[in-house]
Structures are given as structure tokens and as C-alpha cells.
Image 1 (spheres, rainbow, N blue to C red):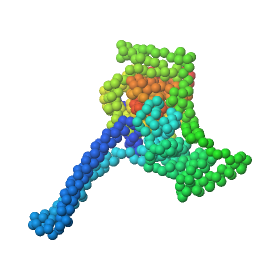
Image 2: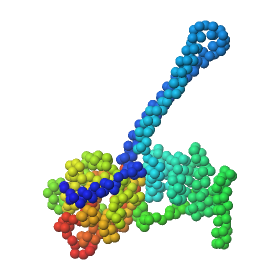
Image 3: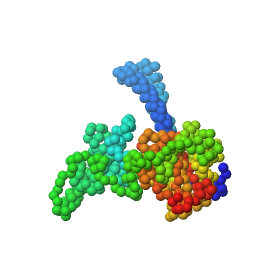
Image 4: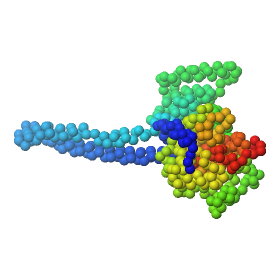
Length: 538
């Protein structure tokens, strides 16, 4: 379908705003798979380098053995050896020619090919910011699904066991990432795990003194002075000359006794219980419904009562007598009664899903959100995924999907946004948000000229092994991804007022890769398809 000039201009502006940077590359599983094959190629290149080095070393050894035998013979009787004219000639030849050849052999550098290959691929490697982002993603999963550090280090995720283990050094680096971000809560958890594995006899590059240094100060920052003192004393016992330990210990002790005197309390030794998940409270952040949101992601706090369940039905839906659906109606299931959320089964075939992915992969860029003040699309830490926008002209499959959405919903998609395809990678999520613009965001969709987002049509294009639910914290609903299905809800009442109950979130993906595509349907063109109600909340 042809779009208005304003829509095309808006799409071009979006493209300009969404150019990906190196730090944004690795937020989808789709693009991270390229790194797997890159690493395989580098391993092959490394093996070829080793083979070349071994071949070179074998040639040098052969020279050494031959020359060793010659020098033993020649040095046993130098004059007698040189008395033979052939020996005299061969000595001249060896020193003039053969040793020069040997020198050239030694100077050969078989690493050139490997270094060249490394240089070619290095531009696509993750950088420090990407590594930090991946570490924070693990911490996000740890918080959302209440996983202790030991579960991560042993590869135990949601009942799944894997060979993906974290070493002492890995745990230390995780803790250091948190420490450098002044996130002492996670720094404590990961430094404690590093210490635990080191005490269990695991080999590591990092020293116990280094771990205790970070751990003791992080524990102090969490307000646990007795334990900070105990850990610092362990550090001093290991390294009495440590440049900070002695000063920190004296400071912690003075601070503790000052507090005890002020509260008229006596000193009690630190708890002997090991630090674990729950020992310290996680600091509050910007999200007021954080606990409710994360509980729903874990499948807890669901408000699906028997009374509500009795009001949910499944049916065949013909799109309000739409000719294209009369002979093959859609299977429709109620997911929630109020606000009404429905799921459609068999909405996308496997072939259609593969085609949509194929079209989207080259265009994937860091997903954006609209700045409520400026209306400009920008990246945000609370939305971690990669997305691409597809229009009907890209492929008949996209045109067919758009038409299907229109047939099912009875709403025109002429004024809808392009089909957005998103892939969520390690810890990928979209924290609680509204799809529609609120009254304090008057310019959010002004460039489109199509009004507010009246409804959301969300296609699930993959199953997810663990995590990745769509949750609604306001009324306690969780909808789990099922490949080939789609969910639909209205963001606005018939009056045009926003339904604030529809604030929702995409939970972090714990295990697997989550692919979705969504269509945001706008108000313009719906005047006779969804007429205004008589009250504000009709």
C-alpha cells in the first residue's frame, strides 16, 4: 500500500536516528551467531599457524641435529678434518650459504597469516562496552529470575544444565564490572562466588588478595561493617604490606566503634553465614513496579483466578464476516477478560516466519524508544533488543501479513506503522512501558499525522526455552511466547483516552532466542471501524 509523504519522511528520519554503533551490535542472538562462525574461522587459522610453526621448528631441529654431528666430528680433530679438501670446501659453503639459509628460516614468521586474519575480523569484535553490557545482562537475569551466582557459575538455569561454566576469573571480572559501575550489591555477590571457588581449590590468575580487596570494600559500601572488618583482616593476614588494607581496616574499626558508642551497643562479630542472594537488599531503582514485574516474569503473582478463568473462552473468529476468513476462520483464545486480550493461533506459518527473519536480519539495529519530550527515537537501557522495520513493498509475505492483521482486527493498517521485527538476545528485555502516547507527550506521533496508537498486534515468531514472557503488572497477567501465535489488545478506549492498564513489559530472555514482530495500529482511518463510545472508558 502507498504511504503518505509524511509517513515516508518520518521513516527516513527514523533511519537517520537509528544508525547502529559498535556498542549496539550485540543485543540480538541473530547477529551474535555471526561471532560463533568468526571464532571458528579464527580457531582454524590458529591451527594453521601452529602447524606452520611446528613445521618450521622441525626443519630447524633437523638442521641442528645435522650440524651437531658435524661439529662433534670437526672439533675432535680440527686439523685432520680440514686436511681433507672436501671438508674444507663444505665448511666454507656451510658458513657462507647454509647458515644464511638457516638464518632466513628462523626469521620466517608463520604468524603473518593468522595476524592478518585477526586484523580483518577485529573490526567486528565486541569491545569493552559490549563485554560490560553482556555482564550487566547476566546480572539482570540474576535479579529477575532470582538466580544466585553459583547457579550461573555452574550453568544451572531454570532447571537446565549446561557445560557453560564460569571460572574464578570470570566471576571476578563480573564483580569488577559491577564495582566499576558503583553497583556494590552485585559486586559482593560475584566477588563472594569467586572467593568460594578459589577456596575450593580452583586454579585462577587472580589472587585471593585481589578478590578480598574488592569484596571487603563492597561489603562496607553495603553497610555491613563487621563483615567488612573480618574480610579486611583476612586480606591483611595474606598480604600485610597491601597498600590499602591496613588503612581500610583502621578506618572500618574506628567507624564501627563510633557507631556502637552512639547507639550504646556492644560489638558482635560478623555473621559466619556465607554471603548469598538475599543477604543484602537490592537497592531501589527508577521502576516503581520492579518487584511486581519481575515476579510475573518468574510466573509468580499471577492474578488468574478461577472466577476470571471461567470468563475466558476460545472460538473461531471470521473477522466480522470478512470474506477472506469465512471459509478459514482464525482460532481465537481469550488470554484476559478486562482489558480484553486475545491470542490467535496459527497466525504465521513456519515459511512466513523464516521469510520475515530473512528480510529483517540485514536491517537489524538497536531498538529505539520515543523520547516523550522531543518525539525523537533514541536508544534506552530499559529496551535491549535489535529491531528492523519491514513494509509491504519489501516482499509479498509482508503485504500478506499486513492484510491478515487488517482482516482479523477489522482495523485499517493503511495508517499503521511498518511491521517491526525484533530479536532479543542475552538478557534482552523491554521494561514496563505504554505503547500509546500520554497527555504529557503531545508530540510523540505528530510527525506521522495518524493519531495515537489505538491497538497492538504482537506476533510470536519463536518459542523461548526460559523467560521472555509479555507481562502486564497492573493486573497481573503473563503471556508466554508460542511460535506462530499472536496476541492483540486495544491501547485506547473508544473515546480515544489511553487505557493505562495496558502498561506491559517484555521479560528478559533467560535461555533461548526470542523473535517477535508487531504492528502498531493508529487512530486515523478507524472512525467508522471502531466508532467513539458514549463514555470516557467505553
